[in-house]
Length: 200
Image 1 (tube, rainbow, N blue to C red):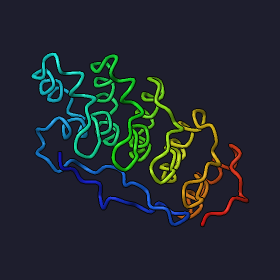
Image 2: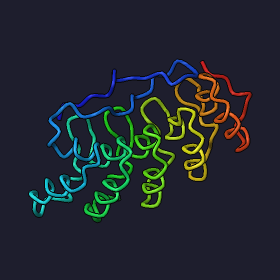
Image 3: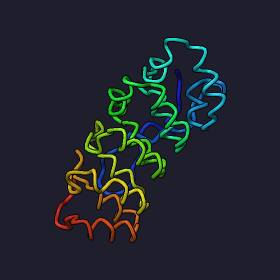
């Protein structure tokens, strides 16, 4: 499916590393499962997937031309109810899809972090999503906080090393300090973020 990613790369502050851009709305018609998942139109999504019959679970977890499953799209839209339905309907196949990255290296968890939905973050973590899977640029889901303290709080317990540096040397703290997100800086410092790490 052809989809939009709002420019393909995004600089979220702190270092020169380009982030894989969080997903924007699908460019396909609103009736596609991708669009329905992104918009959280649960009943329409259920009806669309019901037509897949025995392939319903595969339709949920298979990747489109950009490497994104319906889990990516629901997470990117911050639609908890749709995401929960998809995880349940995918059954055993959901486990493998949870940490599968798209072409930019974004997992559904990173997409949820970028959307700002702590409900989706929590739901994915509860189902076994790994907060330590990095994108192609070396960014962890935590680095997609965009200054939102609730997102940081939701991801911190599952993040093994909050001082992880991406390929440009930037950490989650750089991503907070660069744009001037004071609350995020304070939350990360309280959790043990180091101030002596330099980006490139």
